[in-house]
Length: 86
Image 1: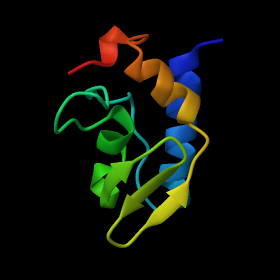
Image 2 (image 1 turned 60 degrees about the horizontal axis):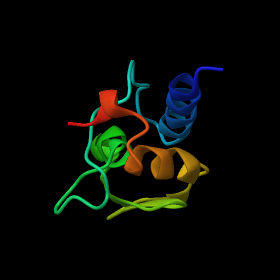
Image 3 (image 1 turned 60 degrees about the vertical axis):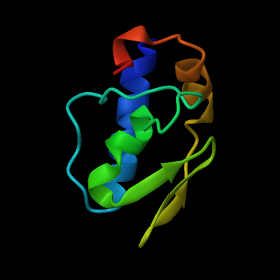
Image 4 (image 1 turned 180 degrees about the vertical axis):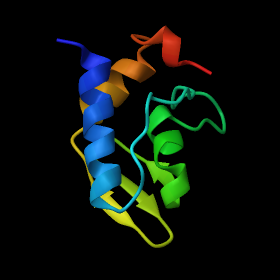
């Protein structure tokens, strides 16, 4: 199974559910332990006004929702996807 493909499908499901256009690929980001980092998911939802992403939710000024992408975030922060590091 293509893990990143599954993550992109879940990101796009959430984006479409909230009226945003789907993405063609996951954006790049920085691991959470980097100072002033923006994670892949924060960048993926930035146009929706999301300013903060944790292991279970996304938060913005006008929008907050739960997600199931915590395992992906943990693997990203652990360096599993170097191709997504900005």
